[in-house]
Structure formats: C-alpha cells, structure tokens
Image (cartoon, rainbow, N blue to C red; front, side, top):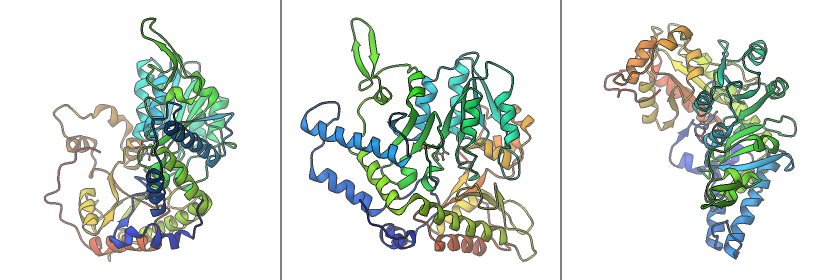
Length: 462
Ligand SMILES: Cc1ncc(COP(=O)(O)O)c(C=O)c1O
C-alpha cells in the first residue's frame, strides 16, 4: 500500500512534526509516533463513506464488518500466524489482552502462575486472579548486572515442586525497564513442562520480528500504538485457538454470545474470538491497525530493527563515555551494556561529581525545559527496579506503603536514594540527532555540577 523511503528520510516528512516543534522524543517504549500518512488514511476513509455498528447485516454495518475482518487477517499475516491455529481478539491495549487471560484462566489450587521478575504491572496483576483461585504464584529472579534470567534459574522454577506443575508462565519478550530480550525458546521449554505461556510482546513488537509459525506462545499481548503510534486505543490478544477454548469467561455481554435467555437464565458463548470482545468494537479505528501494519511492512520490520539497534548502540556507548572532569562516571546504566539481545529501551541514573545520584525529578524538570520527552520512575516494572537498585529481597516483604504513608516514605523505608531511574527509548522515528541531543543535554546540565533539588514535588507513584 505504501511506497517508502529509509527511516532517516521519513523523519523529515512523515515525522516532520517532531523537528517542526523542536521535540526530542525519547519515549518510544511509552508510545510510538504515527506517520502523517497513517492519519491521512484514517481521515480519507471515514470522510469517504459511512460505517455502522458491525453487529448487523445492513450496508454500513457490513462495511465495518469487512474492514474489521480484514484487520484481523492483517494482524495474523504480520505475525506469520496460521488463521487455523491462531485467533486475534481486539482489545483496548496489551493490558486489556492480559486481563482477558487472567480473568478467564482456569487457575485452581493445584496450578501455578510463574512470572519473571521483570514483568510489567499489567502482567504482575495476574497474581491477583491466581491468588483468588488458590493457585501458587512464583517469580523467577533477575541476575545482576544485566538483569537477565539464567536458563538454570528458569529450569529450576519450571520444575519446582508444588501443584501439578501446570499453569501459566508469563514473561516479556522485551523488558520495558532494562530492554533485556529474553530467549523466545523459553516458550517451548515451558510448554514442555506443562505450562501455557503468555508472551507480553508490548515492548518487543515495535522493533522486532515476531514469527508465530516459529514460536508458539498460547497467548500474545500487543498494544498497536506502541508499534505504529495510531490508533491509541487498540491492542490484540493473539491466542492459539486451543488455548482460547480452555478459557472460561466470568461473564457474557453484548457481542460475545450466540444466544442468551433472560427468562431461562442461560447463555451460549460465541465459538470464536468474538466471545472475548465485549460490546461494540472501535470499528472506526480497528481498520487503522491494518494501515499501520502496512506502513511497518512497507518499511520492513528488519529495517526498523537495524535502525533502532544502531541508535541504541550509539546511545549506550555515548552514555558510558560520559565522565566528570574528576573522572567519575556521569551515568550508571541498568541492564545490558551491549546491543546483543536487548532493545532500544535504556534505563539509567545520572550522578554528580561526588558520585551522588541525581534525583530523577530534577532530571525530569531539566529535560522538560530542553524539550526532551523521557520517562522517570520505575515504569510500572517494580521487579526490575528492585533488582537494578539491589534492594535486599528480605526487606521487600517488610516495607509497604501504609494507608497514611507517602510514596516518598516508602522509598526511604527501602533505603533508596532516589525514586527510580531515567528511561530513554528509541524507535522508528528517532534519529542520530536525538541521541546526540540527549548526550549534549546531560553534559551541558550535569557535567561537574550538582543540580538544585529544592521545590521538587512529592512523588505520587513509583
Ligand atoms: C512490556 C509492557 N507490557 C505491558 C504494557 C502495558 O501496555 P498498555 O498500557 O498499552 O496496555 C507496557 C506498556 O508500556 C509494556 O511496556
């Protein structure tokens, strides 16, 4: 559908609004940015025709239905997933996809939920579904300093005694804290031990090829806005049909059933993915998923991968080289220092010449003043933060956020000198000038200086 140029050329055209507004956008793990032509395609489509609620056979409904069906197929094609084996459920985002699995997963007192310690909170939250049904929950710990998980640690967790060793294993293909990419071979390994696998591909999919004919997670969660910026309210649960059939939804709603009787108090769920799509789909936006997929395909996901990997390498090298005049390093990076098996998500803290950590709120204030969009805190990934800051695991059980306590009290209780890290992340619309601007910002603002920390607002979350 699209005829494209290289990512470097696209910056001036499709992503021209960045430089026109002097933005240095370093939050691609938060959200990718849309190409102008994606937005034009949306406007062209909805101004050229009428689209009705898809749950019917009238002409406007059928037009919507056809585009939704086409988008489902486009998702499967993008992931090289055989439609006989996989189904696509449209959700509001990756979190919505994960929740669908959690609320319907047949956890019992004998089954287990196994999580890696660097899961996003949207995966950590599965714990509550497992716990409420008596299932055991376990975390596989991270190794410092790379914040990876060894094959041995995974094997130990997969074979640990307890329950019948069946259940759900959930992990991120790429950590949204450290950028670590875990081996996708873990999927088959866990399945061989009786687990079903939920792969959180939210941070991985934007710049990495995911081929579901090679790896076969039972459930894969994706947010499309992280891949191509627009639309912002659509994600997918891509599930093996057999795994989807084992889920038991706790309710039914409009759009999810074949028949329901009010008087008879019974219902029969739809026998396909629509059983998981509550109410009316966002039928004016779902077709834009196909537009976005066409856009990425026209550039080539491997081209996107090489582009962001090269920029990440340059940023990692640049950060490691930053020194104060007294030779003290200016930055400490959390996670892998090289670009092998890691994405372009880089977490760090900055340090003053005496080796004291610079409060992440000061970095947020100063970078904002420079037009830089980055993230500070723990990015909804407490486990990776706890490992990065080497918090003694025995301390974690004893320190909680009391009803009257503040987030700052909690951090002091943990003995942390700051409220988390600084995260910079790169994507398709990034360029070398963004990397250079960030390094210049750090040097200009903090080299041989201790920034002021007066007037920083209390932290509301971490
Ligand atoms: C690895 C990972 N998983 C899950 C999520 C949740 O995505 P969403 O907020 O789009 O549901 C994110 C968001 O940053 C993420 O990075």
